[in-house]
Image (cartoon, rainbow, N blue to C red; front, side, top):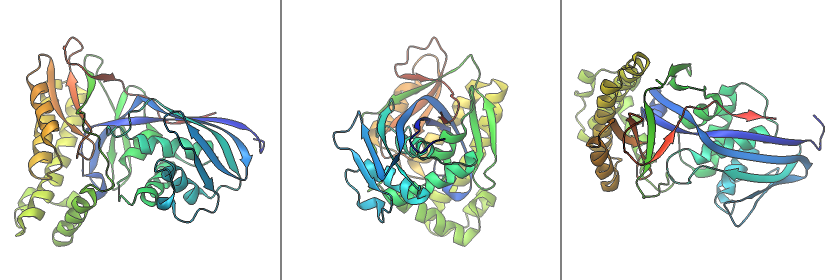
Amino acid sequence: MSAMATVRAHAPGRVNLIGDHTDYTGGLVLPMAIEWGTTVEVERGADRVELRSSAKQQPALIDLDVADPAAVEPAWARYVAGVVAVLRPRTGATGTVQTTLPVGAGLSSSASLEVAVALALGFEGTELELALACQEAEHLASGVPCGIMDQLASAAGVEGSALLIDCTSLVVTPVPVPDAVEVVVVDSGVSRTLAGSAYAERRAECEAAAQLLGPLREASLADVESLEDHVLRRRARHVVSENGRVLGFAELLAAGDVAAAGALMAASHASLRDDMEVSTPALDRLVGELSTTPGVYGARLTGAGFGGCVVALADPSSPVRGWRLHPSGGATVG
């Protein structure tokens, strides 16, 4: 590819069907890449990275030797800067960013941007290596110690399937989504940002529990009950029980038992609300409304919480209003 080649990279967003606040503890998650995403089109060969977004007034102007991505302005450019800081490309690029993802809805707009930018700047490697690089970029950009789920779902999406990701081994197993069910995402109307939220606090609490019990991935609910600190006990109980729900949900989804899978989604939301304490009144109301809507099998908040969206499994004939999304393939470059 010549130094002045024009490159177009696309990376999908994701919705997480079940398994939140488990990835950073080495647990199990079940996201799916979606048809909405971010497209970055650039001409390589510049002396810095210059990107203009159709959704933002100010461009991202990033020097190749950027030292502190978190200090870059405007805020959206920090994710671009994080990728530049991790990849250290030999040449820059000039181009545009377009996205069909709603920002702040919990559909991984930042991970989608990172993956698309990395590919546009010439990243070469496996899907896992791409996800790990973009996870590091997110850490540098936002200061949020996120797990790998968002970036790996975007990089490794499989058409027609959700992804069962083991965040210890980083093995990805596609789980087909039955044609007879729809994944519906409903926005709570409360924008979500992890920077400034209690996300880092929740992660620290899970890590404190793990120091007492050992890896939470290997702990049992009986082990969890031995914790004397009631906050750590609740956080660990969520992680351990959620890992079990992810496995059960994947098996039920593959078997086409969407009613039983929906019941696990309801249990997941209750655990996120009560034990992890990351839900909001708006999310709880929305889950309650959806749970009584005809044709909805189950609903839960999706993503880290503190706002954003609810995801539901529904019959295609259900009157539920929301974004009806489909499992997409992963990131592409050309």
